[in-house]
Length: 413
Ligand code: GLU
Image (tube, rainbow, N blue to C red; front, side, top):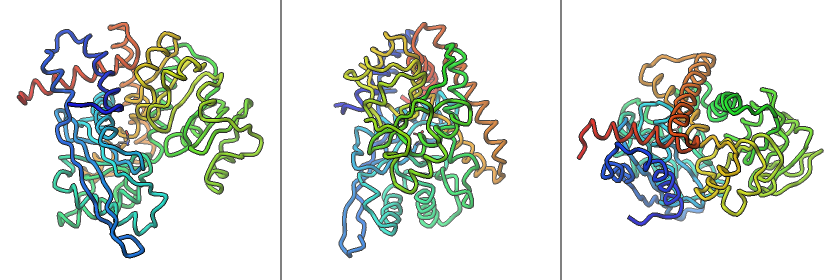
């Protein structure tokens, strides 16, 4: 199989760890590297001008040996089958590291949702579900939000699915609005989980400084800024797709959030200095948080990173070449599959509550999340110590072992 650049990088991460698993047969490892099912769908949508426009979408169900496939749906102009395959693979690893009973999947549509009216966005979301509904279900494949998808989009998708099937089945999708069976705490779960991990990681790695820089100010990055600030970190820089801002003595996150809401960008925030996304990555700070898209820390800029720790809230922000450079520099990297797994962990809680028909308080959700994140961190820390490797490798070693064990025990071949 030809790998595209993003999935190719994901497989390199797999291979680096797999060689250390001497007891796992090579053919089983090869089988674990292949997506089980890849769907490409063309979705016709009637636009507001009366004309039909066809959008291309994907859903990749990578591996279901540990349970139903699970992972978000991304709406972005640069979505490709290569990217969705990589993301579905990372979900497989992430769900194992997080200790939730799922395989991994991911979906995406090539679209810039900012260019669609609300009606067009609704029709596109519903028609995507019409195109893939045979392959989705609460015990089959459970989608959720990802880049540029929202609780409202999940609501339309759930409704379409329920209409097709003629039954209520809220567990088919997570990240829903609360009134439709969403979980309290899901909106902030990715960042909240990241913060729980960060607290453990700085303790384990003896990092005492509190300066943090965050790339990305969306679902994950903006909430991380808020929670980290409340937890006593000094957020010195943030950025979005239009550019970044810096204030060495710390940004006022509450005011910044209001500013971003009214102006659509963090750029131009009073009292801050303008910087580029590239400059943000090279700032002198204790913790750097990439919280936007993949492949932003590369072999070209990795040597410029001055942070002591990187917390990957985005999926796949660091290329394998950059990983090697950061490792040599002694920078502690907390990988995406652990750092951002709070989102899917609370998605799991949402699904459990939907199946159970009984709902928890926000405090219960957050406490359960904390327990899961600390457990996941400790699992990787012991694997790291046993194999004398990086956190990323320990995540892959841990996950590949569990996934191949599940495959072997099921006797799928
Ligand atoms: N899109 C999120 C992720 O990449 C959440 C997935 C989910 O909740 O299923 O982890």
